[in-house]
Image 1: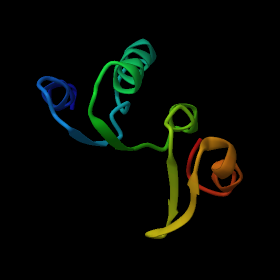
Image 2: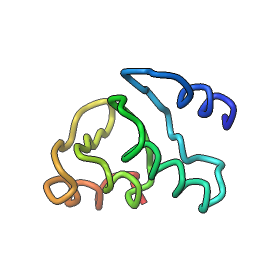
Image 3: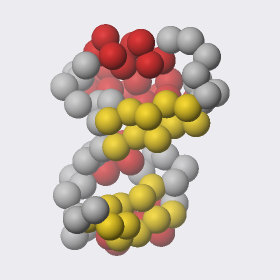
Image 4: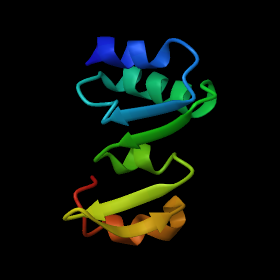
Length: 88
């Protein structure tokens, strides 16, 4: 997974689709990846995660349950939905 993540980040992509990019990374590396994704890449980023701590850093969050959108918006607007979802 680390190699796939690195390959996605190298180059000049305009869109990054990442499935749980923080999974299986040590916490210090998770923070570095998050910082890079949010502030250093010009690409539009779509990422999935079950980690509320990281999800809260993104500009728009979509909370899904059972394949349906339960809430969408900024963290302040959707955090109520997280309490009843799988995000931890």
